[in-house]
Image (tube, rainbow, N blue to C red):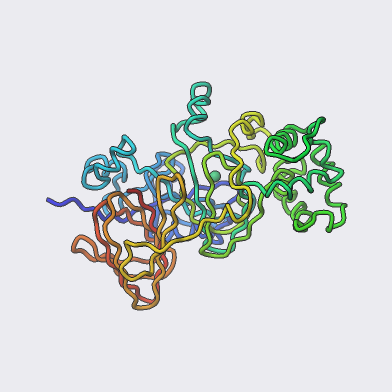
Length: 417
Ligand SMILES: [Zn+2]
């Protein structure tokens, strides 16, 4: 008997306060379509329905235990189905590479109405050190590169600005106090690290005062970064005026505004904070994070730990952008691929017009696919599947899929090999 390798999923959406309200949240709208699942007050699984008073942040697709996906037709946990048929669904190659039968990546749809915590995801080696001290907090021995692909206009702080640009800004009068007492002839990454660490550790009055002083400076004192004084009040309205994230993000980090279809890549240990928009995000299977800003003081991790882990890549807006490439597994050429470096997954983007067709050749590893717009018929393993907005499918290794769009189709497929 052949194993069913194409499984439609029921996914759920969580409710962090930075999410968008009710049906303004694309994550919630997509989760409501199939429908996905939710839990009632007694912990029973129910169909996902949007409550217009709640804030919906992330729809998760995959097998991470915090918010797993279930098979639509049977209600089984997707990971249980994979474990029973690991050879057929995941494949020996991927099992040997990762040493387990878990899905090695976690795609999400995020709907962001205000800044997410200023954060980084610790890499494997540093994690091993931290893990022995704090095994409650960090539950996954995994590094965590991340990509974020814009579905709507997407604002993000990602990596650091070029050093010469940061050097000019940190020498503005209100910020000089965060520089080392003895300064090197040129502003380098160690000085940048000192600056970030000192801002993160500054007392609340200092942070609030510096932000007020920055707001009063003439716009042209910020050089090419004239958005800084405009963004201060906006960030202050989202979090406390005493949040150090505002200064770190505006002074040292790249501020990017992406159009739909553009993507950024964040390496393990890379500093980032997303500000607004709807995106598809994918990361390695891990939930490790260090937060130091854009969150209540009680939720912040140690500035020293954060800075000891921090990487200085990317170091310009261009380095942060990830370009798509043509995908050799596409028969029609209407599917492109994002390949994050050092990563455990790639992401395919498929855009079809009305009546257009696509065939995706089999890959030697599992995939998760989501339809974000339009409708189509998918043929796989001799069966027909109706695709519509919000449909999420698990596609086992070695399966060819054929698509014929109705009025058009936009879908995204994450896979490993
Ligand atoms: Zn992140």
